[in-house]
Picture 1 (cartoon, rainbow, N blue to C red):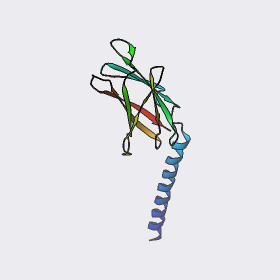
Picture 2: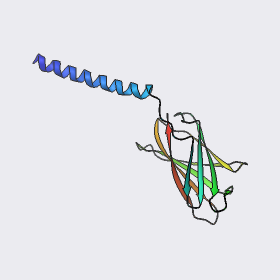
Picture 3: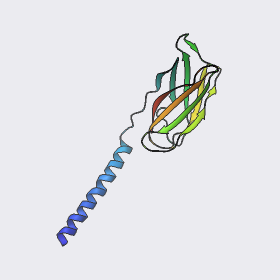
Picture 4: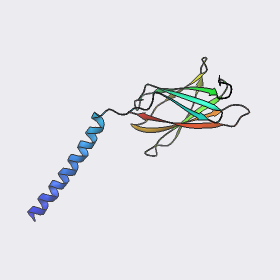
Length: 143
């Protein structure tokens, strides 16, 4: 009976040690940030996203800087209604929708705050008057 209790106790202690070690390693090892600048095609638009700071820190505001270029004319799209939807990839944290602010240099700025560490899917939607709404997604890793 004592031997079984000793084995059970050692097993539980081993599981606790493994859990602690796994948690410690994620805090010690540096996170792989997503690319500082990412580009994707959304219909006739080429969308470039820059994350500042990269990687974004959870619970602190970050800024997404978007540049939208019409692929056929290579002109900046300055008259669009741009919104961003963010959702965590690994767990259901809901989806936040944020509307971008147009800047005088032709870019769009989006203040965004990621709730926790991990991989986030950022969907950019571009609506231009008289054209179909287009979208594309980017991956951002918060740490």
